[in-house]
Image (cartoon, rainbow over all chains, first blue to last red; front, top):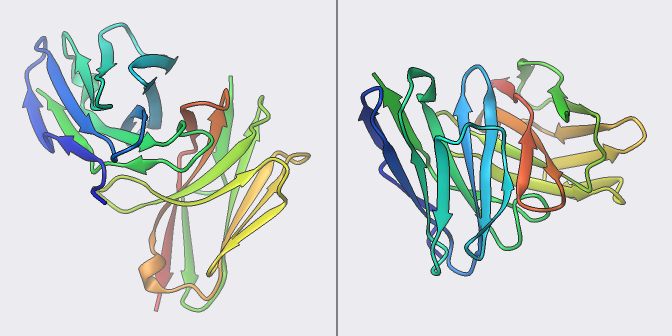
Length: 114
Length: 112
């Protein structure tokens, strides 16, 4: 059974640009969550999608957005990048939601904003 | 807002000993609590999930307890090995849905 796949693995962007990250969940999983991980703040929840609907949202500015497609694949977009957006972005998939069932994380996308 | 604290940023123990990691939380009563392991440069890997009505759960050398009165979870690794060296993260569910709130993690180092 294939795991959670995130692309790309590494990304370097310039301030002010926008970026789109992709996540393919485990087959059969309908919940996809996104997290930002930085040394100072740890793992912070961005948002969660279940069957193409956003069910939960974290405390991030509107520059961070996402969507989920009918095949459960998800994308995350960050517009007008800031230096502080440099982080490891992790995607997690689960059957019902990462709270009540185990979450399977991808390897992450390392975003560097210069 | 919900807050999770893991006892220390780093824990050093000798091989063969039991490692005990602590997770304390405030301002919330989660229905589920989970523990993950994370190695450098990789995503977290699920270890154990415990529900609010469960006191203890075991899996091989791992044991987790959940005390909803103390608002605390303890995570034990018995007969620890150098391969157990990693960062361990405690996480609570929020809203019994798709949101996990993570602690900062405890970096465990097991010396031979």
